[in-house]
Image 1 (cartoon, helix red, strand yellow):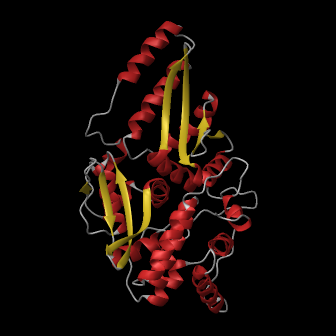
Image 2: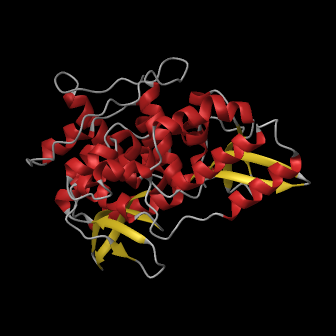
Image 3: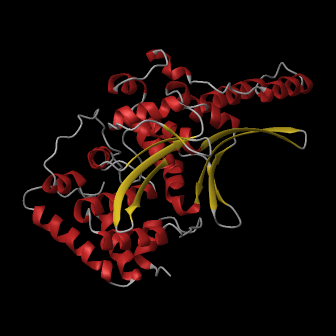
Length: 370
């Protein structure tokens, strides 16, 4: 596990190093990324130390969370935290696919990501110790996939049976598992299986479907306590890695502010719970596309978010978060520097990785970014 710099003898080193990061924004793009990514991936800075040096504010008393502890083999030492994180990530970007082709049924648990975030798929594969990763021919998308029915039964089902999906994907999971049961039943003829499976595929969730996980609060979330009874911090971190956005946005022509947003096509209750857990005062919005959205640029909410997600995420979202959080601490209100940082984040999101690039962070250190 990477060492965390602490207050005391290392405090001056922490602030000196961060200052050096910010000074490098005026260097070439190549040198900027090399230094920043080297520091981000080799030192696990504690954002709270920076935040409280700058801000004397009272934060929400968030529910406890023990971050992933990764051993020398790259495996988490707390499997239950990973499992809850995986369910949250799946609620965001996972699918349970049932397909029929060439007179044969296929089941697949899949998680798709832009190849820019290929590292998170390698992280998932390493923790589960099963599955395959594929990068599409155009290089834009990558998929982690498990098709083996025995692996699904022995590895995947126990996770999702213990930690219920909080979105409409719970409906899809139940369909998926029922299809698995039918295909595994040797007492059924192929004709019987086909008929049952085609009937299952026709079923659709209602427009107001709510996952059974919310039944313990009677499908009613109205404060932090009711939200946290259903939604664990590990789940929310995984879901945020899939669906969350840490961004910089123009408030006026010469003012840039920090923002955070999560959108959902369905499952408004999920966003209501997130709103209460993160301490937002905003109402859930409905966008022109019909999607639900929870977002904020409020300073107090942003400070709560910075604290909540400190030292948690595993994919490239963790890199974006750390740059975003540091820029708030050091450059809030500084239009020029925030605009430069935003440009560089947009540039870095355009990078794509292949399966031969096993550690994207090393790519940024050793290769030039054009």
